[in-house]
Length: 519
Image (tube, rainbow, N blue to C red; front, top):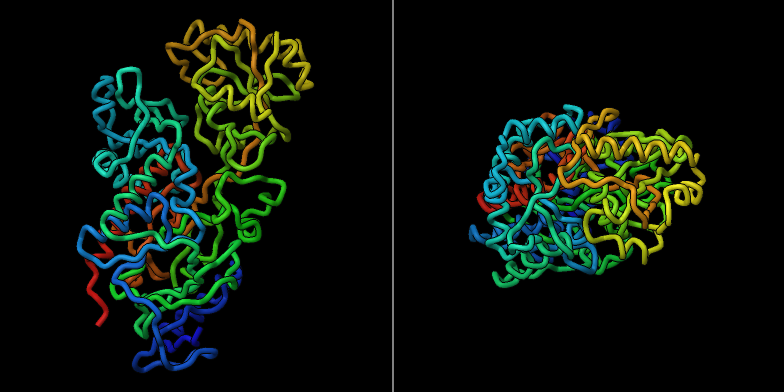
């Protein structure tokens, strides 16, 4: 690969110098390559001539919810679109997600007679995010949630159906009102698959094993392309062949989070070392975020990393636990191994739930019975060896080395809450169809949080334009989904990621296509 030009104006040189301390702290000292321009100071290590290997108008990086939505919208707007994916499969993390979607004002809420509001949706996100969220972004997500869900259906996405063949709502922790539309078997792939097929019908194929490693800017700081590694493997930025792609209108970052990037995430939160597992696919690493920061982007909330509480330490990665244990959260207690007592409102947001488990210092135990069971994930959990069957509560407590008498009493107390529909200890909403846990067979599973979602990323405005350290948009650079930080505050409210990615992915694609092409 030829060397790349990098000449930078005096103003951007001074700005970059001022940022050096912050970038060094993140291990990101340096600058993005700059194409030649007028009145510039040379940057060492690059030649004067920029030669491109490929060209498009809009380059979309990442093929999850946000990237596919962006590519479809940009193509619909008439732009020449190229979409690349660092792994060898389409869909990114989204294809492996549970895929449920928080939607305000849907026909499903209307059918169920549920009254909701934008303000309630936004407030639920703010409470979960400890009020660190970008409130305007939250409001935008809520306002556009239903039209975006309807759009996904138009694009061919499928959602789980009840016995009447209708989509239905699912109770999610942290939501004060039922608004989450349930995804079925296949999870997020029920969305990413149809979206990628639609994109292919439009003449755009996702180009896999192409990893973005650097953004290219001209002398005025506009992003005009990217350096990618063609045939990249194992998240290695030196693998494959370097290719320079000219994006005459814009680059859209839909590169997800960095949950699998052990070194980078430990720099943000040292507690999240190799002993803490991660639910993400292997490509969830930080090279695109690093490239963005080197190009002048402001990074926000990178040390807020969400842990998914209802995971099992007895399997690796996402596994099957959440498809079973999450459903039981409305109906079953989570007990401390040491005390046998409940530790939390099991329907609180993910941060409070995960923190409560972590505070015990060891995996907690969820116990239920066949009569009280919710959902269809039990057999998969048993087959995976993470859920055990018992003849009695006493047997379950003994197996997990818990104080037997305390567990028996706590289950009885919980059953009294089921009967009265009032949780006197943690104020958890008890579902109308909840049943007491009092009839064999009983089931137990260990719970221990895993890294799930990175709240941090590049700062963006309501048009998904990436902002620099002066909160000024970087021309030609957009971001959406988990790659954008600050949206969810300290902790993302469950089922809002799908909404965020699709809403902002569409906006990013529309805005990128509307950019004036580079002269």
